[in-house]
Image (cartoon, rainbow, N blue to C red):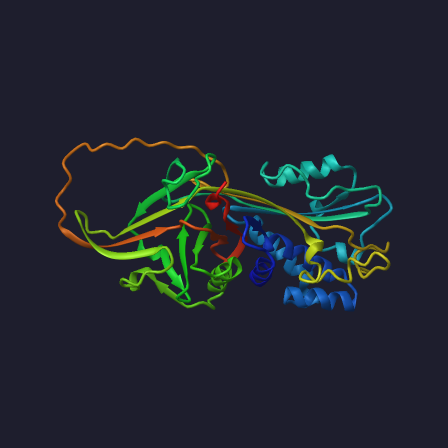
Amino acid sequence: MNTLTARWCDRLGGEDYALSGAGLWPLLALLASAADDPAGAELAAVLGRPTDTAQQEALEVIDLLRSGESTTAALGIWTRRGVPLDDDWASPLPKEVVGALTDQAALDQWADKQTGGLIDKFPLGITEETLLVLASALTARVRWRTPFEGYPRVRGETWTGDPGPADQQSLSRTTSDLSIAAVLDDAVTRVVVESDGDVDVHLLLGADQSPAEILGAGLRELSGQAQVRPAAEAGDRGGPGLTMERRRSPRPEDIVELTLPSFEIRTRHNLLDNRVLFGLGLVTDTTTSHLPRLSPIPVAISAGAQDVLARFFAEGFEAAAVTAFDLVAGSAPPEARYDVTYASVDFGRPFGFLAVHRPSRLAVVAGWVKSPFQQD
């Protein structure tokens, strides 16, 4: 699934986006399990899995995320009256997955319920010609183990040349755990923002690479295919946005200072714009049907879409928050008696992010953040 995410990122540019390969993969697997041999081979090549186990694996992915501490997931299949599903294909599906196709409002309600209000409209509009709808929904909601301090961004004062949109915050926090920072393949700085649940957010900052190359390094690391140089072993080399130095401190703990802008990204993808990438070439041919195991009524895909929302804020990953702090010195500063490592990571230019399900190393959502750094 992370391979599908990486290939999808490679098709997108340098503007803001968020996508979910983890949301698309189960649907492609269900289609593969219902396809004839030519279409099944096309989909299996994208999935990297055989068609005879695709349905089972799709359900396992949904179950994995549905049972997660910080994630939810659901499947939905709706059919018109007189359009039955194939009995053998439908028998492994949980009963609550299959329903009657009625109207747009019912689909909107399903999307709203399954995402807890994060996405309140179904990404596709059904028509009188629609016979069957197949959908997935997933969410990830976390609070940080160590929250950030958030304060209004002032144009041009947070980072050099940074316009600082008024609806965003500057976020900053200081911890003592150097292990959260590392350099991947000597080219990309990764900082893991740990949550109180089982989803962490990996922040990825490169130098002059493309967004796809930067996100690709982060995705390769999830499967152990990237070289990892921990910040604690970086000496004074550092990495993109990562500065390492020795400082005198009144406390013995190391210091890791992290700064970045908050962000909220909404993206709608037309999946048929990348039908070859997703293995949808044959199953979108409406002059015939390549899904004989799905229904005794011949069907083909006429539209596909994905809506994605990602929010990163002071307290967590999912909801907006506005927070102000007033700090004053209450006593004389203590004597600086210790020699500690000081690390500072400044996400002061466009960067990538991965919301990673910690137990499975699955990238639930991936994205690129550019708008906080755009000039008006």
